Image 1 (cartoon, rainbow, N blue to C red):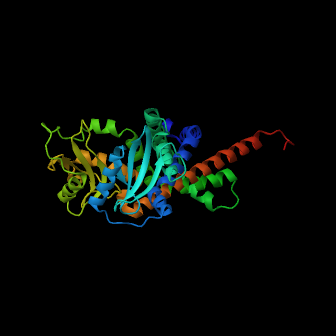
Image 2: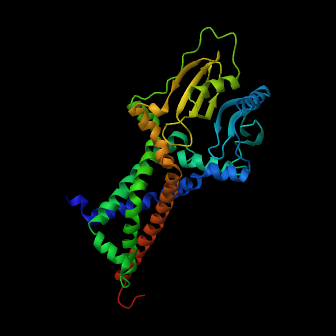
Image 3: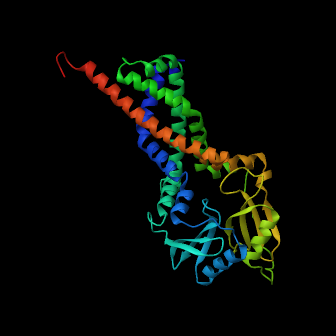
Length: 363
């Protein structure tokens, strides 16, 4: 129909692009900066990879608690092996404490710190995920992501009908600047569009993953509290060994400690056979008496659970291992390059229009 004719599509493509350009550039740049955030942070922190000794790790965590720190969760750094970040509240101040698998304390920083001590990566991550605007940011990024997806698709549609002419423009030496740029814009765009669309689609879905999970009836079950509470309570080290023993060959990803309304230890593991990702999706709940109350085997997730669990590895490229992460970084560079080419193209066309409108003898 008339809507899909090239001039109309190109016009829509141009104005949508110009409206959201700065946001897309910031999203691409921040995504690129954090694609290897853990590796870079751990490299500059300078700690060697270490084996995780459950008893030593648990002892340091319990010592922090005994000193009055209220721990919300513990996560692997995602960089070198045996590096853990403890997220806690100390005297009303949020802090992140880095410890290693042998229990050594390495870094202790306030979350009010936005840039030094590796905090820059956390700041960039929060910006990339929600623009630092919480739920408003998520909604805005959903709209922005959908517009970017439609815009890349429009660019492919608009250029496809003229692909031979556009390819010729990139090789000819005497074509106007705008035509040459248009040729390169489509040619470069064509090669990066499919991986970029996959990454942006997964990222857009991630901004509304709770809604998507509800729609697919996926819920993360939690155990019932044990009544009455057991008289003998196992320590964290023992609970950790129980969880890891459920999935031989697995590694620890995250720990949530018991609280008044959660009478269990929750462990997140990266288990053999599950989808490739830095942070595994296998979960084990261990009761205060040391028994396994509930678990989720991510290697055998139901199809609808697999959809939700695949969003993060798809968006970050982790689903393809190191190669996938490099493709992901390349897609970020591609988007920045396409934005720069697009701006140049717009300026060249404006200059061209200005030249045709100037009066005879005008500059």
